[in-house]
Length: 323
Image (cartoon, rainbow, N blue to C red; front, side, top):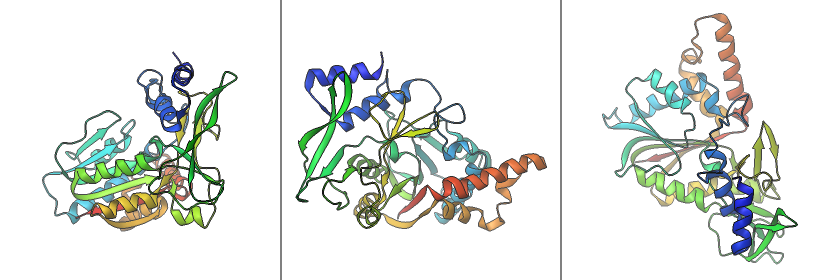
């Protein structure tokens, strides 16, 4: 069964659904969701690239940061790394080659989280952008919000107004008629992460925005939702549900708000470029570019270039300290 008939059947039975529900089915349904299809979405034959596929350079640079953070904590025996949404776990594999014996646990949707608070690092590489969101629009009078959901018209999935929205935390103060994705799921995930961490660092690597960029810079006048298939981006996220990835940019300001409320400290918010430059600064990237031949070293230099000047200028990094 495909996702479209399942979604259409639910709409015909109960009426238009919130976009969050549409996204949950399209991405995470155990039978028809995008992540349950068994097809590898990464790399040249997939739908997109992430940092995790730029190996071994990305993993070697993350290994340098992990070693630094562990030393800052006094090298505790209980130190470990938790990675939600790890995908193929390529970063874990590369970091553990650099640090044999390092405890690194990968979690996917539905997996149980640690029952006891841990000491170490929670590493989130493109985790938050795939969490389900709702879509709201600023009312014409600027005093409230209207929620948009998904309905069926003439046999096709379409956007429909669901009516006034309840107050949503963390949203930027946008102008009348502009749309934005909600960030409750992102904020809830950050609370869970911080409750999991007794002491250590949360590293969030993702694409996103700050409130000021939305409010003053005018980014994403119609929201940031995007679907991806075969390395092509499409703003029509209702088309082909279950066959394409769907993402929303991360509201980094809302994540910082949650962190401070939970007692964490914002260590840094920077570009991925700056984050990785800091990791390679101690040895001028020598350890990240170790290779058995000149041709292989050239390949690694191209990886580094992509990480710094391709993805590095798009992705951002939020670092949080839990004392």
